[in-house]
Structure formats: structure tokens, C-alpha cells
Length: 323
Image 1 (tube, rainbow, N blue to C red):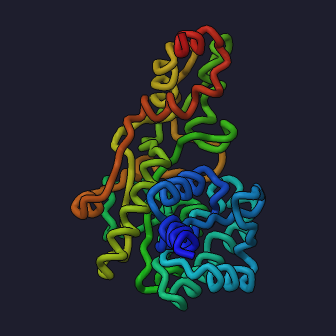
Image 2 (image 1 turned 180 degrees about the vertical axis):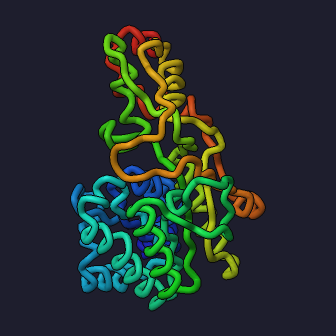
């Protein structure tokens, strides 16, 4: 009989008491957020939709009944809302679907979170700003140039209208351990970098701050943990990498990281004509989170090497890593 009790106690010890629900958990950011909480003594449940995986719950965020049920069944203390349509050109071509996910679903999630007293972190973007007067503080007036930025800003408003204790976390362009190169606007350039037999035009106009999803995941967890101790942690926050680079400069840094040539890459300094309008420089001022002692920054070269080496086609380089 005493042995039985010991086993039951062991079970109780192993299941973390803090619960977090992550939407978009099958996506690039969501996977990192799930892993970060899971590895730091949180009971994490992830939901995805299109990329169904046994590891994650399949939930259509537009189905308010399904959303209500998972939130009431799991009773999370924290919800990190990573799910979104994040491709500016897709938002422009499918505005209604994008607005449903980026705005309506976000407002509904905020309402459900408020209903159980959960802390919601809504992931937003630097594209809420027009990029004419950087760096941007949380108090600066947004002015999105494209529909993607507009839907994310509307999502922010819908979240705060339905839940005044929620947090908005604005972040810039992301990269990390991708499943496919197309999953990130940073990693998607790798094939152009690798195939040096063909010259490639790269944007050298828009100033970006590539940010590692592991760093954003750490910020989400640190923010959640601070909030569990201090209810005044709410409102809008900015996080960003601190290395300013155009796509051309990122491509050159990627080439350099893998000792590949970059002479075939051509910098294009003109304002891009194609697709959705983009802000020139929407640099985010992150001092508010830094003052709270929150943050983590992986140097770009180290982070990009870790993210991209599985996609390197030149086997000679691989051999130097392992031998």
C-alpha cells in the first residue's frame, strides 16, 4: 500500500501545474513557443489546423464552439495566439478569409480568455507602422501601409476591446528551424544564395530586423511568468532582433556563414513595385521589455546557420562539420 502512494505522488510531481494553450502551434513561431513552454515546466497544449499532427489538437479557430470547448476543457492560465495569415500578398488576394482569422478569431479568443481569467498574448507585427519615422515605441501611433498590417492592427483592437488584461507582442520578420525554406521570408532566400551559377536580384531597400523564433518564444514565456506574479503586466510590447539588414545583406550574411560566394547576388535599391506595399524601416524600440528584464537575442549568423544547414546542398561543407 505505501508503494502505491509513492507512485501516485510521483505522477502529481511530473505534471506541471501551469497550463498554456498555443494556437498556430504547427507554424514556425508556434512550434518554438510550444517547445519553450514545454521544456520549462509548463503543461503546454498546442493547436493547429492545416498541418494536423498527432502532437497537436486540430481546432478551426473560426469555429467558436470548438474554441470555447478546448478552453473550458483545458482551463489554461496563459494562451499564446500565434495563428494568423501572415503572408501580405495572400491577405491582399483573400481579404475576407484573412480578416476572419486575424481579426474575428482573435477577438473571440480574447473573449474566451477573459471568461476564464486566462492571460492572452496576441502576436502582432512591425507592419502596423508605416516605417517613415523609426524606431517605434509601443505608444507611437500605428499607420499600416498594407492590408496585412491593417488586419493585425484590427486584431489588436479586437483583443483589447474584449480583454483589457491581454498583452500584444509586436515582432518583425521571423526565421528559425524551418520545415520548408518557404516557411520564412529569411530562409526562403537560401536557394538563391546556394545556386551561384545564376545571378539573383535581392531587395536592398527595405530595412529589416530578422528575429529568431526561439528568442520570441523565450520572451513569451518570460512575459507569462512575470504576469503570473504581477497582474499589471499587460498592454502592448515590442520585441525584435537588433541587427539591421536588407534582404540583400541577409543573403550575403547567409553566404558568408556557409563560406559560399555572394558575387552573384545583386542589390536592388529601388522601392519594390510588386505586391503589397511594405514599410521602409519599421524598427521596433524594445526598451519596455528590456526594462522588465525580459529578452533574448541570438546573433543572426549563429541562428541562421543552425536553421539552414539541413538545406545545404554542398556535401563537402557537411563533411567538415562532422569530421
